[in-house]
Every structure is written in structure tokens, then in C-alpha cells.
Amino acid sequence: AQSVAQPEDQVNVAEGNPLTVKCTYSVSGNPYLFWYVQYPNRGLQFLLKYITGDNLVKGSYGFEAEFNKSQTSFHLKKPSALVSDSALYFCAVRALGRSTDSWGKLQFGAGTQVVVTP
Amino acid sequence: NAGVTQTPKFRVLKTGQSMTLLCAQDMNHEYMYWYRQDPGMGLRLIHYSVGEGTTAKGEVPDGYNVSRLKKQNFLLGLESAAPSQTSVYFCASWDGASYEQYFGPGTRLTVT
Image 1: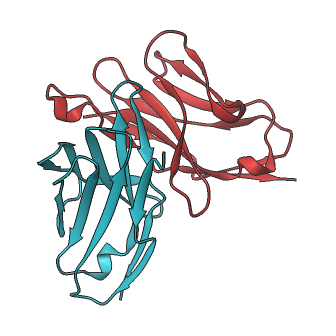
Image 2: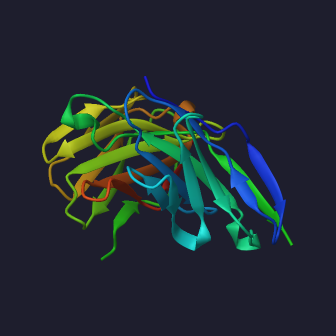
């Protein structure tokens, strides 16, 4: 069975400093990996994905993530954090299965709260 | 193009009452999902649908029912609400071309 772990409940960073949100996964076969962001009282918004190809994936709002197969990780990064990046971040992996039912299903991590202070 | 919309945004129920949450999407997506979000637990899949007229159970289906009579709508029902169903409920639809899920704004449900 696949699983996703976000080892940090909260990440605190000063504005202008680099931001990293960690994610590790466990799947059989090739993973499809995603990052979503949730601002207060809002639904989840897609940030970026890794399906295949280049291990460094660039996404919305200046975020990027690096797929590392040997470490089974997909950490989210931003070189210079903004106060407006304060939000809840979710890593997700596409559930795999033989049936077409599984094609769109995602397994989400527990989420990491990012707090960026001025 | 409204994307995914959910009705209502907030609701308070007494234990034992019933209600239906409505999700609508205008992107012509085949696959739709209902999740619940609880603190520290991420999103857990309740039920999903891979097309009009089809539904399937997710990770936490007990106490919920769903229907997909029209492709654009996915309804989540609570027949007899319990305090354990106090949560924020999200609907999503899946774009098979981009592999992305699109989420609605959520419904905050409190059961007293």
C-alpha cells in the first residue's frame, strides 16, 4: 500500500529565508507526486506535480520540488519565503491499482503548517 | 467557468438529523471525490465516482451515502448525523489529462 509522510507539523521561517517542506513516500512502481496548498478557510490549490522527466519540478508562486528516487522524497522548496506563503501544505501521491477506478485517487499526507514571520 | 462549487458553506446539525451536501463542477470531469478534513489527519477519502451513475467507497465511508445522477453533480448525504462527523468536507474533480484534482471551497459541518 502507498503512503505519504510529512514529518513536520509546522515549519517556521523568517521572511526572505529559504523555505523547505519535507515529504517522503512509499509506493510500488513509479510515483505520481503532488503538492497542494490550503490558505485559511479555502479549498486546496494545486502547486506542482511530478509525473516523469526532470527531477526538479517548478510550480506556482515560485515554488519548486525535487524528486529523489533513492531517498523516496519529494521536498517542496522556495528560495525566499514571503509572509503570504503562510498556509497549510499537503503532499500527495497517486494511488496505484489495476482498475481504472484508481486513476485519479490521491493519498494525502497529514499536512505541514508553514508560518512565515516578517 | 466556476470550477468546483459546494453548497452550503456552513451548517450546524443536531445529532440524528440528516442533510445533503451538493458539489457541482463545470469542467466536464468524469471522476469526482468527497473528502473530509480533520486536524492532523490530512484529507481522507469518503466516497468517489468514476462517472455518471457510478459510486464507490473510499477510506472512511461509514455514515455517508452518495449519488451521481448527473455528470456535473456529486451529492454527499448524512442520514443520521453524529458528532464524529463534525468536520470540513471537500469535493474535488479530477482532470485525467493533467492528473490534477480541482477542489471546491469546502463545507464546514458541526454536529451537536
